[in-house]
Image 1 (cartoon, helix red, strand yellow):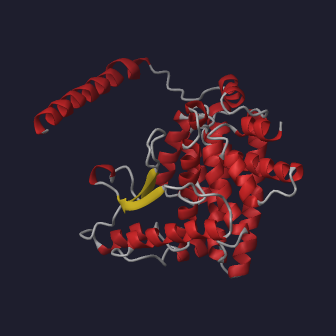
Image 2: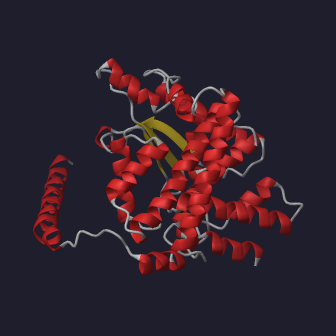
Image 3: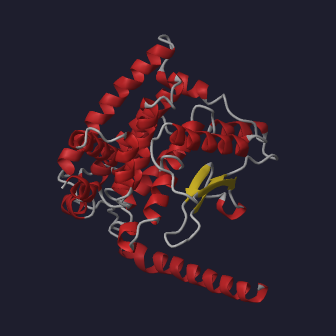
Length: 361
């Protein structure tokens, strides 16, 4: 196997070098330097890909409404914890409470198992038979691009639906201060939220349901609609707080901090692509308003510039699912929570608008 593997690797390396040369010699000299999609294209993507009835102007209004609402909620929770301390101080203090280097993988394994059992015990949604989620160390070749953790779903055609949750181990040879900084990203307040978002009843459960659909189009949705996929996992965070799984005030504060960031994504998504906002202004907004580290904020904004309307899908998808659940309850007041969620998950990975048509007519 070594010889054909080397041959394939050399061919891949050459292709990458040729592509880099193409970017440097052909694309960059002719680039106009403007990443913005523009108002017309932005609205077209909202209408045709996400199938929503709001445009960029209304989307920006919703983003600011959610931003201010979430900030007020954060301040209220912070006062419950300690009226004399700021939101930022409380969140930073929570980061100091984290697993050990040796116990990191087990911390996530236990969290995944606990939330899975909670979903079963509280009849939140049906977990399909035969699904598996393994928590493993991130392979060395992926560690440069996965600094903390990531979920890898099973393929849509795989008979065994086995998802992988990758956790990048802390380098035991790194200086103590570097190890400590890394472990802060895995704090105990955050791990349960990560587990429910990425695993049960979040991404893993939803994608296994989608992969079990009887036809390929229903498995793919419209090439896996981000408005539903990201919206579902984010919806699960608030759901699990309402059901008592996220019960500690510091966990609630952390969830709201993530929601503030998602609201900021809406604001920046519209502003970067239709309002002339610069990369530098967007980075400053994330650092100042959401307390992101500058390097992380820059990486975020670079992604936003390349994917118009994708950043809005997290919070807007969640709001669409909340509306769908409420309308389903009104139409079928006797339906249990599990029945509602199973009906939604049984639609596959379609945009919420198509789910609404299928479930409610």
